[in-house]
Amino acid sequence: TIILENKSTLFNQEFIKNNLVGNILLNKIKAEVIKLNTENGLLGNNINCMSEDLKHNIWYNEYRTGIGKISFDNNMKVFFSDYSVNENNETLFATPRIESIFCDKAGKIWLATDGFGVYKILPKNNSLEYELSKKYIYVYSQANGLPDNNPHCFYTDKENNMWLGTTGNGIVKLNNEKFYSYGKINGLEEERVISIFADTIENELWVGTYGG
Image (tube, rainbow, N blue to C red; front, side, top):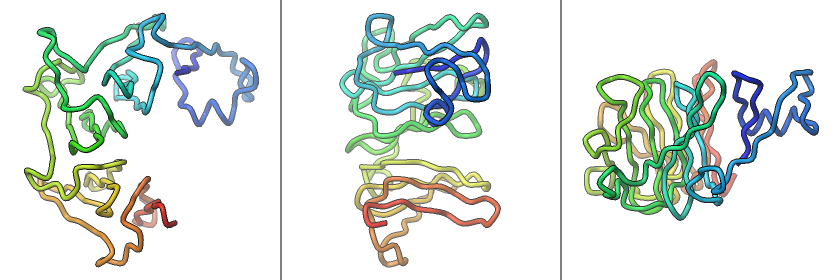
């Protein structure tokens, strides 16, 4: 896992890819590349996905051990948190394998699992702090209406609908705790969805699938 810093600014992987030459950004901002692994605090070295929350913490999944969070102080000192178990060593999630992590505009953290539906982590008492407790974790699965237990990606539109791409049942919209499915019957030729993006100007939803 690589993080790029220039004292107070974090840049995502796409920014690094497009702008970094050696350790100097193309826009002349000097920065330092830091490698994080198990030697300095990561849960493991197989990082599957990452997302930044509203306080600029980095949430990540290590495919074999679960969910972790990377935090920073004002001097960019790095702190690591393990969110796979609580203080009593109780497992918080049914699987350590997370396909995607997403932070919405309200600060809720969404986890797409491999076979166990979707986990939603709520901020504690409407703050932007998170507690290692099942009290603040909600599960969506086929048991309570989710059409597919294998979600792959997330996106929220300007009306705050949550869209999920699944690996076999097309796309799903979550609105007011109700699910609406869109698949071949609605014109989607391929129901294995790997990415979703909303064009807020044209009010269009773009869906990337294994068939185009």
